[in-house]
Length: 400
Image (cartoon, rainbow, N blue to C red; front, top):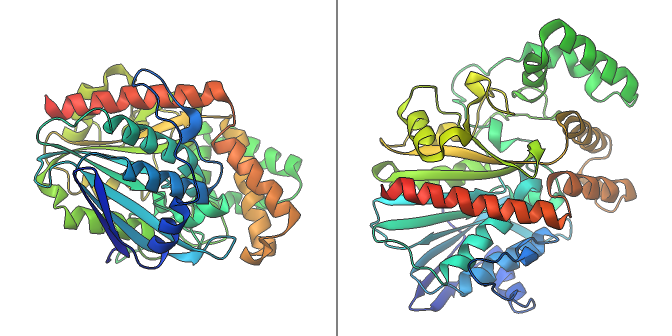
């Protein structure tokens, strides 16, 4: 996959060569005022955007403020935003091109969760304007990995694909999820009492973990349903694979942090490790993050084992002494998560993408945003504080 545009920065000056979506972002950048940078010890909630369009402007503005070399790219994405504008994923390599240690921050793997991803990335970029990187350390930021879901306030992409279930070998038979098949007749049932009764009966028969795997573990034959893994590599996966290849990341020690929201205790950033227990990646994550590191495979996480995670694309290329973690921020209970997602999928199945101006679509978009990025100053402050702590630990691990 070729980037749609590239940006380079030298000595505080940023040079841009935009095409397509990049030109749109360049134009937007002139219409938005950069939030005032706070002192390193302070936190500014202005890094939380109120829309995908504003997030793109924030991303560009913070890149413009950098005082270090930067290799920035924009990757066109399928589909259009609700206002008809094009969409793109952005990336920025900051620091020495030949650095042997790289911190990777990913935002927007699940589109709607990108609001928090943008905040974490822009908070880091703001700090990097004041604090130089250590020698032999680079940072790779990947912004709005699923821009369509971000713009439309959905977790999936324009084809209904969940990027975090898409990383499988599509040359092999598709994975099966018999639990999903059993529950599928109830997922879009407008009668929530009947649906909840079916969920309770399944949970009583198979257990809570089995129930969560049935719903969210991944399925590959129902494009209208939730947690659909698709039938071919999607945009976000192809962007990641391109960046891995272009920067030869398999030759560098990596600390990857993928920012998510929606699971776990309110405002807590859980460090979730899906490396196989006992593997070098798992041992590295446990060494860097200590007791905070949880593992779905061992039943210590708010998450359950899942198929096709983006993690697996990184696991396959990681050298010794590297690890990938999901930084998962809790919002509301898992049952509420499933309910809001099912309402969103049911509406989309009935009305399609053309319902952009539908009043119920707007209400659902607001409901999704509130669930995945609550407009609560205390919650948002905890998110940024935790992100700084986890990033600090990752950098320390890379440099140790």
